[in-house]
Image (tube, rainbow, N blue to C red; front, top):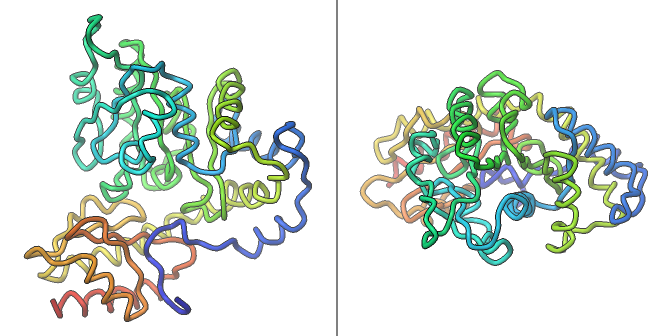
Length: 345
């Protein structure tokens, strides 16, 4: 919709002028042969930013997560994850179909899993029970409203998992948002994970792509699993060129998106027809509920008529996600539209 303020997701961002220029000038080769210099550069630089031995460029975050699950598990094992996590609800049951694993879900407070909660979900080592193979965390947590797991909670999980002999994977699709909110580096925030996935195509604004990070040995195996999932790309340097700008430049401006999300959240909080947990609005995602069983889909349809796009994520729940393509002024405009529509319910 031309002229719309699109708050459905941070995946809707369009490449910046600098990205488009870099893409048009990118040096390329065949990445399946490992010969694309721009992809190789992106993988080296991403690994360096996170303090890892190696990285792998993948088309999607889902693919990155599912490759990691396959790396760490054996068929017939369980993967401990949060009850509203992306690997559970939004990845097409691929941990079952590709890795032969099932999820063991644990409800976290605002999506945050502590070691105390995780340890109770670990399967006992008895031959007639499926063993636990992996712990998977999500930071930030999408469906909890972009909440951030603090470093001290992560450190407790890393320590407990290590003592239990369990690997830990991070779905860090928006881990740069988490690092921005906590004022820490992504390397510090992810150091104890056995593998990390982050998206270039969400808040960082690249058109396509995610990165999987880990040891050099793990990433060599991951390359084969990527091919098995159909993720072997050829002259992918055109995409990696935009990814380099996303990694090195766009990560520096995420605080603007967080401030805009707070603006929207406070506008919602002022209206009696909506219910919102302001403490959960920590990054660039805003989730709220319509009181008195309000129809979220109808509410979003009404916003669309006024050129504000949002997502209904449940019968009564609405989500906004702020990003590079929506300025402060546009968020102020959207906040006024949302407030007016809430008053009319």
